[in-house]
Image (tube, rainbow, N blue to C red; front, side):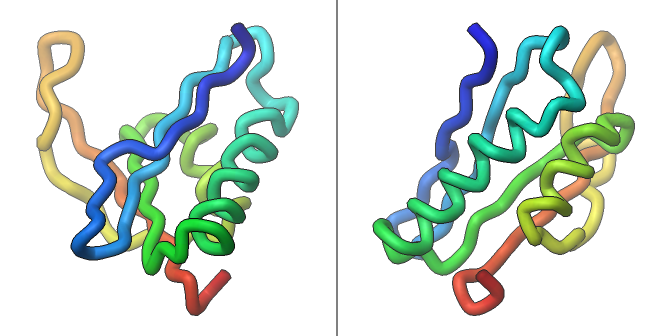
Length: 102
């Protein structure tokens, strides 16, 4: 498996989804995740008529933050100590793009 990309945390009421993805480490830095997620963003706005698409990343995951910026997403803020990962609470950065910005 190279990449898995999907809509997660879907809200029909608000026409909003969160993007999620996993990319095999041997393929990092090749633009594959960006390409896959660009198709999800396009499909979300053009076919599903979404209003908002979100992405989230651990504050130390600079690769994912770079991908979200390449998708045209804007940094909205940081959720402080919202996830417990590897025996510690971690911060999460939140990014989004609106249909009107796409």
